[in-house]
Length: 310
Image (tube, rainbow, N blue to C red; front, side, top):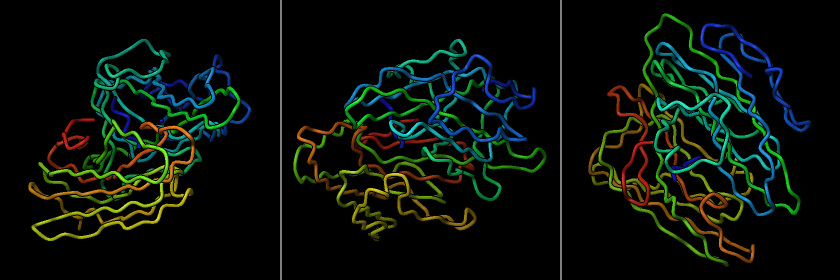
């Protein structure tokens, strides 16, 4: 399953509404003011999140766009616990608005990534003239990740504000890059796993982060460009990095270049003291980037050394 990160009711052009009258808002969900130029989505509560459970939940909204639309930024909140992240996708394979279920591989194969947020209202904005672009005919889909590391059954819910770019200027889409192994399984104790990726396309990176969860101990990222290896991250992991990782930001006009033939090598070490193996979702070893997509490449993932769209 494509689970890289790495989630109100109003139609395009109909203004901005608050929560729809039929949506229950859980008491521990913070709901921001709706944007003046954009839209807000509040998902229905997701029930019965079991102790030890790891859920990827997909919600098809009634946001269906009749024209190409550029998004400048998003911010999201979730109930904590069990919220972990909110990801905004779009699909051209529409489902009835309000459909919400645990995501399937078939569902995820029809999605294209737009932007992702943590749980606590931090803004994810495209810099300069970059935007997150929606094609005409797209339906917004919210992907919610819930992790229940406690002992009680929980309910989960998300709210996301989508801020449109101003009309008029010429914008360039921002694409996403993920280096990942979605088949990850972390054994008990202190263990290390490696990932290797051969770059097949050109990427003009303006943003790059490593990502692990709270059992992470260390991550290193080596990038070999034009035959020269550079250690991009050498990070002793801390639990707060799960939501606020170290990052590298570049001016989109002077990006960090990846070219065909370059190599990316990632090493992750964990201290798994949970008494059980940790599957992908509970733990991760990911490098995530954003790039200037001036060639229409779209979002790409190198998943266990195999390239795919996401």
